Image (cartoon, rainbow, N blue to C red):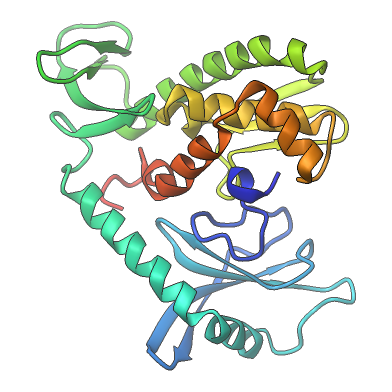
Length: 282
């Protein structure tokens, strides 16, 4: 899946690659006309061409082909030249990412009283500890000024708060995705062979020619219609691969305003991918 749903384009600004067979990344620095830009250099046996992506935690990542006759002899030189050609684009998106980071930081660290997004709306996080609960519970509750996500932490639960929230969001995402599949698969005349809920860094959903679909659990943080748009997008791929007029006409039969929700996901991609991190300070 590409376009705004998945980000397979070589220069998608809001996600990082997660390709099988890639290196973890080597620190490097590109000396551009506007100043130095640190980045991670990744070598991938699956990559067909160079690509640059921005990760909310790891920053700029340049992936270069490795081996299989496509390997690049001087990858750092090639990566620097690649970034230099795209410097205006790169700095524009880095500036936007920094604004997004500052905006998120203003909400406060992840903990009691913080604001978190869920189902498209900001919720106040209320964390309750030491109440004798045998199991940790997470649930939504209406507040006077805004809805709340309430976390009742069991004393025996040693998980960090972010891990608790990730588990809750993943479960709710599966429920929401399965509901959307039940709503749209029949009218589109398709039936998936299987569905996986994961945490990819470079796409919101995926569809294979064997009929298997994959979705990011982070979609449950977005408005329900944004999640539905991704579900319809992937279901449509079971009938039409590629993104030609026939594909978009098919998507529009179920989601006439799909462009609006694809744009919402682009605009909030940094926020969604930065939610509930392993290291809340990161």
